[in-house]
Image 1 (cartoon, one colour):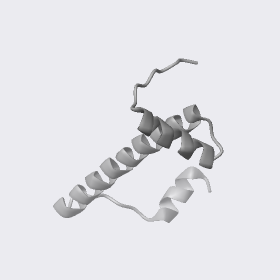
Image 2 (cartoon, one colour):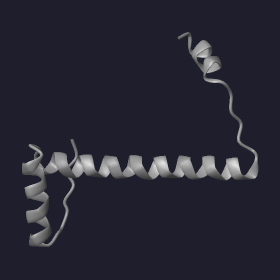
Image 3 (cartoon, helix red, strand yellow):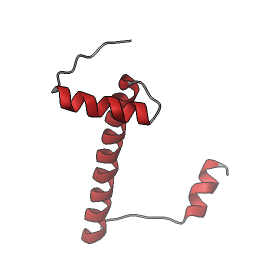
Length: 74
């Protein structure tokens, strides 16, 4: 596993440590989880913005959910 070094002011480090402790995580787990969640949130926002753009432009293609279930064999 790789090691990442991060420089933060002592006050911020205290906040990070308190957050990790409150959530029963190590500091590494807390920082890693927050980074992954941020990336996921930004990706979700990008997908939503693309959806909204296509919807407004009238280029959005949809199909009934039953077709998807059938395609997936569910």
